[in-house]
Image (cartoon, rainbow, N blue to C red; front, side, top):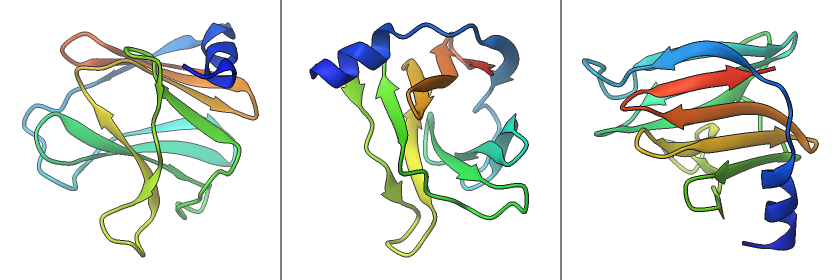
Length: 126
């Protein structure tokens, strides 16, 4: 793990429990959950195949946005999750999330979201 990732992984921020995400009985491309992070930022989880979803960020107008100062870490193995356009090269920017793994999301070095796998993902945020 790089020094920057180690530094981010060690940042602690008190997040509150915000519910859970279940992939069961969800169809591909169905919105699983929307979560308000700030007045102008929402996290949206969209179902993909199997136990995978895509994490998108949208503004208050529900427009997809790419956050250049966002870092998503797979905290199960300490690796950086690379964002990609989904479902096509011209689609919105997203991060692939596997239900079996844990994740931490940082915006401008602030811990804004955690996903903890417990056969469904438990969500904590600001």
